[in-house]
Amino acid sequence: MGELSDIFDFLEEVRLRPGMWVRSLDELHSVLCGYRVALEVHDIGEEFDFWPIGPFAEWLWTRLGRHSSLGWWVEIEREAEELARDPIELFFTFVDEFRLERRSSETDVV
Image (cartoon, rainbow, N blue to C red):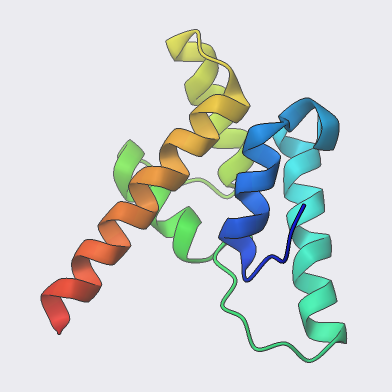
């Protein structure tokens, strides 16, 4: 693993070998919370989209057409079960969509 510049670089490492990092989305959520705490401890001003209520969760509620207080990881697991898909794989599909829409909206603003 080389130098990582942000959370999305870290997530790409997880995507390459998910089983090495986590066994479930609940564990991934815990790892991401640890990542966020480390940013705070080391006074790194990086945006963090993956809190239970935050940009990714809000985007996901819109994408799924429902709101939940359970957390994005629980709703992705539910959605994966309905679609008969791997939850971690579906998470990365949603992350890709989230990033694409974000880039698109940032380009529209400029």
